[in-house]
Length: 288
Image 1 (spheres, one colour):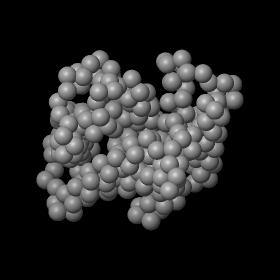
Image 2: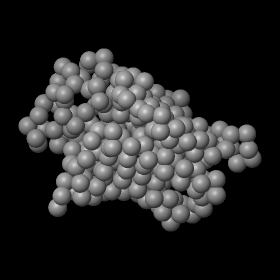
Image 3: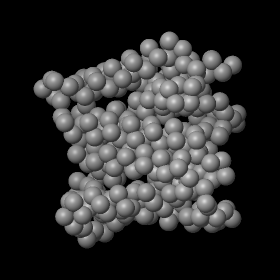
Image 4: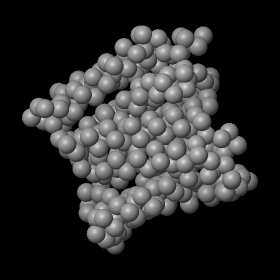
């Protein structure tokens, strides 16, 4: 198996895992569990599982580099992304929230140019603007189908893009598993604050507990698979397979929640994906 094929397969598995994770968290929220409590249990479970994996690799759970300013910035964006996107999938259709999230790579490319000074030509800037136009098509501001709650997905998009940019600047001494510990841990105090505002926790029944436990396991696996994917093959070949997450999300939204994405969502999704793939392919050519 070539490195490119291996990386692409792991990227597809990672995106399937993230889509299943989103579906499970939405089911738990729809069953009545406050989003703050979802964040506490999901973040705490993921943190403990990553800590166990870190120890199994012989790595330290605590490292002084965790409190560096760059890591605190990363934690802030992680909280922003997880909080707003979890609220988005709880309050809006999974299909539209997932479609908006697909613009994350476009925002990361724009941020890399503005913050890190990476070279981005006019073609990629045009593709970024077209992709953001696709997000507006999905949101349809000012039109009858516009929902204010859909802006939560935009907040999640900006948070995850900021996290990805901050991860580039994260100390190299920290492994991906160590980063996972504190990424999930950051959700716990955030969820506690939100839960206090929402008015109290709900005692989960067996179905809720099982779905949350499965979401944690699938989410950690997806994170690991994403790490393997990004360390295998060429980035310009592997990264476009991120967009399979939207395919999986649309299928799950229709099968599990009975959603039927309208034409604006499908057209906007196609625009975002096309712009993203073009941007990534242009990046690959620029590095050769």
